[in-house]
Length: 238
Image 1 (cartoon, helix red, strand yellow):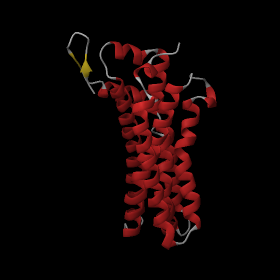
Image 2 (cartoon, helix red, strand yellow):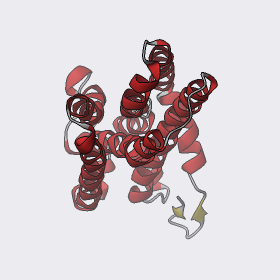
Image 3 (cartoon, rainbow, N blue to C red):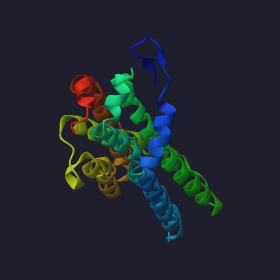
Image 4 (cartoon, helix red, strand yellow):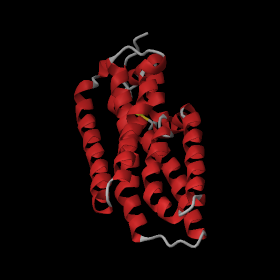
């Protein structure tokens, strides 16, 4: 996203720089998300009755780790605000809204990396064992895995960013960085528990309904952010 400096010159887009810095800021979470998701994918493929277990469980687990791996965008925003980087960029003409959107785009990219890697490895391994990619598996991935990955990742990032702008940053669990992972994984965990206990007739109602519900919450948060996150909220409190 670009803006105009006080002298009327156009400010170059900061998206590519933000993406690179977000990858660096969240690299530990990104690696953890990919590694753990791949380990559990291999475990699912090697279990007895692996085909049935894989189809039922794999689509539900991917959003958990994709959300964990997508925290770099939020971490970058929180860190830049506390260090005064956002204030510096705004003084040179960057629009506050573009700084917020850039970090959300970083979240989308990071979650896509984890989800894409896991899906490629999981589906390739599943097909290599002689199992066809059934319509049930496809519907679960398209109807739940993909939308819930983006919904839960954006939910965690948006909550963390808004929280960081409305409160004084603190270290540890009480900070947005500490609590956001819990907020992000909560919806997929709840769906995993509920979906495993319902019949096939209600499975898609639970999974797809949950994904749409979280997306609606994210949309509401984004609308609210335009009112809650005034320009002054981007300024450093230090």
